[in-house]
Image (cartoon, rainbow, N blue to C red):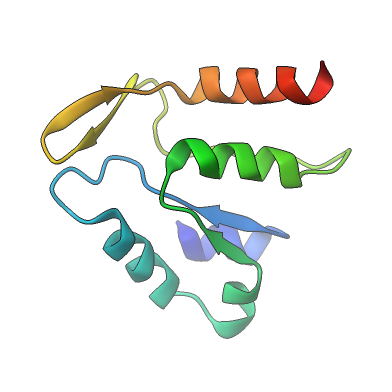
Length: 101
């Protein structure tokens, strides 16, 4: 998924989804390993998903599309066996409201 996103996008923000018992940093490093040098040049890695979504939205200019992939309908993020409340849609809505007033 990271390789396809980097191939067809101007900028890609890699982040964690549900790392469960894995280290999020390691998952992101593995995604980065599959990228060419050119693709890595346009990739930003942010482990904290909330911060990654906010950053992607703030980086966008008029006419850009921001695709937030991974969580879909899930309302939690599972880390080390614990399901933390998490809603991509709420993060996106809150960030856009802060930008547009």
